[in-house]
Structure formats: C-alpha cells, structure tokens
Image 1 (spheres, rainbow, N blue to C red):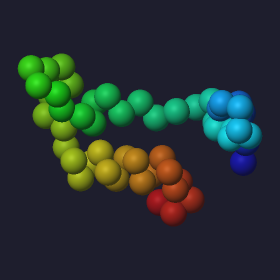
Image 2: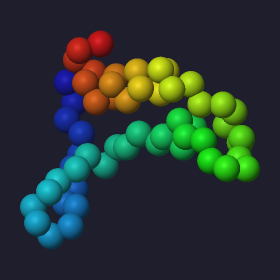
Image 3: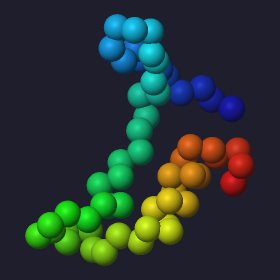
Image 4: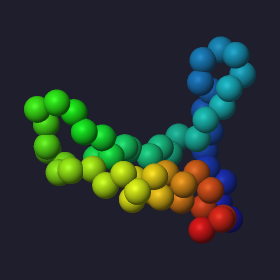
Length: 56
C-alpha cells in the first residue's frame, strides 16, 4: 500500500496528508442549489469510506 505524503500543519507538530476530501456537494446553503439537494446518508457513508477505507 502506498503511503500518503504528509505536511506540517501549524507549529505544534501536527502532520496531515496532502490529499483531502472535498465536501462542498455534501452541504446546503441558503439561496444555493449548485450541487442539488444533499443526500445526508450518502454523504455520511462517503466520509466513513474516506476515513476508514480498510473497514469497507
């Protein structure tokens, strides 16, 4: 399995992966339907798959 590249975040020793999960389409905001109506169960499942890929 390939390891994700990590970078420092801030100055307190926290490191995060450079790859992220864009969640804009998982939200709803007043006056905006650019991505359509969010599907909450599907959004939650996507976050779980991204957070714990070995469990899916």
